Image: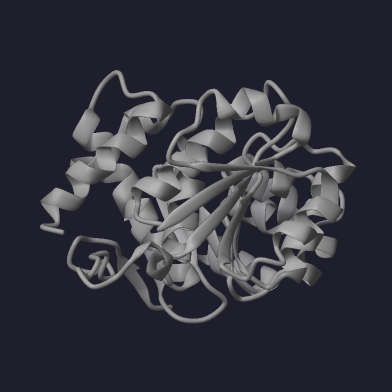
Length: 284
């Protein structure tokens, strides 16, 4: 198996050209949950914008519009209710990258939203609740996925989606690298398996490692909302045109560097605002 480490030398080009405008960098749509549960999606949306998506829209239930409007400026807001509302929004083909899961809830409506999003065949990040919603029927999710999807499970979510692979991993029959590859092949898309050693695998091609240990230790990432920010970063890079594995890998690397740039006391809200410092270190 071809296993490679993510370093600044192996990152894809994240720069922008002077002759490009915002629509050249894509339009990301992040879906938010009901009133009182929008913070996670707002974190993801801000991260998508900071990492370079040309435009970002937060889509939320109509009853949550006022709450989100009070806290958003550069991020646009669209009220929509249910699968029919999402289908209508996705008639705009300029929306080229989607993020579902952070704060979305695990009720039946989330499953319908995921179905509509995946049927639109846009580059899509599924995180958090969008994964847990299918814990009782992961095969139903796998049948809907396509090659431009990225799944971002932590250990618990991985075990719910891939229980047999997780059992083998815990028993020592799989390394984390082999487990992530097996999961990607089953899902038919890129899987980013989170942790101190984050593994990114597609069904084929190299497996990428983003190490947050030893000299890249970033223990401050163990904080609520950090994963939501990572999902938003991936979505923003998908909007910019990176393929699923490139977007997941680059986002994972920038995520760690942003945490290291801030240091102790980090909370999730700090992460997007550290992205410019990381870009400056790359001379972008």
